[in-house]
Length: 319
Image (cartoon, rainbow, N blue to C red):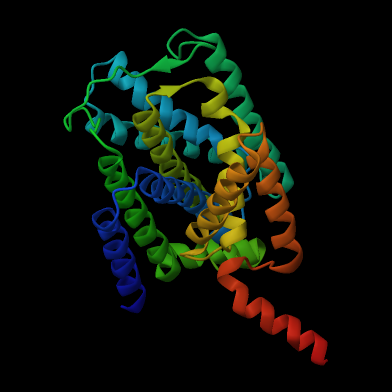
């Protein structure tokens, strides 16, 4: 009950924030931090709970983005329905990648490299076919209305992202206590022992990557709807994958709130750096890499595990 109350309190506070400020800068910061947090939560399902590290989560982001925009431009589907189609296709892509990878026992660095390869293949294919707009990309026509999921102000997108994040938080909290989540963590800790106990690692990991893909696909669809443009470099490039994994690792793997905490820290540092040095090319990647190195060195449990890390540190000093 207490975790659900925490999620409810978080929802109320974030929902009330637009009522106490009309600053577009502040609203955009919170919205994009939530967006990055959702990406981190998607990656956390597979890597944090399941121990299957992916370097190619941009694959699911890209499919979600492209399906969402193609469904509107080419198939005439309303965006409120297109977003669910994008989520479903991204989950299916996750299941296909999982079936091809886990069936042959790929894990660790091998699985990570395979996911990266899938994302790169998707990027090259997106550059080569007409339906994706090739290298030019696709642009969503500006037709402001709630029916078109195009809001007059950022507040509409803000609340849309908040709903997505709350759903992701509830799913993650469910994983903490559900049998499926226990199976995932057992596989993460010792796959052979889990198999000996009657757990089917292939099926469990397949469901995990499908769920992770669906969540990542939702962020891709949201991106397209907000910025009204997508191209292969944005969809399948390294930015989405890096942002997802760094937010989760910095915040704390296998935790409910860790990815959100990591996203807030990273976006705060990015904004501070941008104000100090301007929009330097690649500055975000430099920040993400630097923070990741520091976290791995000094806070291996992430920000969410700060108390445990400090306790362990002092315990070692005393001994």
